[in-house]
Length: 124
Picture 1 (cartoon, rainbow, N blue to C red):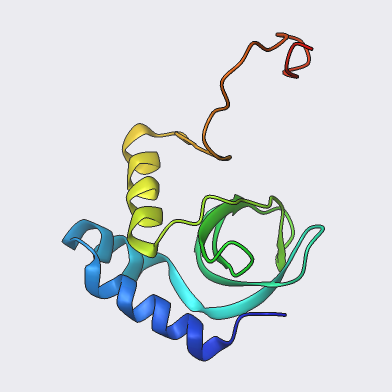
Picture 2: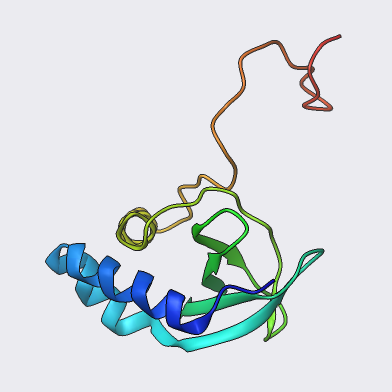
C-alpha cells in the first residue's frame, strides 16, 4: 500500500523545519511536487527531488528518505533501506556535491566477518 500524499507532506514539512540553512537551500533547489515513481521490483514510492541522475524518494516500506540513480524517467533503479530523515538525506547530497562524486552509502551498515574478495560473499 502506497503511503498517503497527506502523510508525505507532513514528513516534508517537518523535515524542512529541522533543516540547516545549507540543507534548506539545496532542498529549495532540487525539490519537485511529490510524484509516484515505480521502484524496480517493488511498489511505487513518492519521488520528492531530482539532482541530475539521482532521484530523492520516500520509501514507505522502510519509513524514510533514500536516494537512487535513475535511467528512465518514472522509474527508481535501486531499492535503499537507509530510512533517513529528510535533512540527513540532504546532508549526504551536500557531501556528494562537495566531494564531486558520490560518497555513499548505498546500503545499510557493514556486517562483521570475512569476505571473499571476488564474490563479496561471506566466507563459509
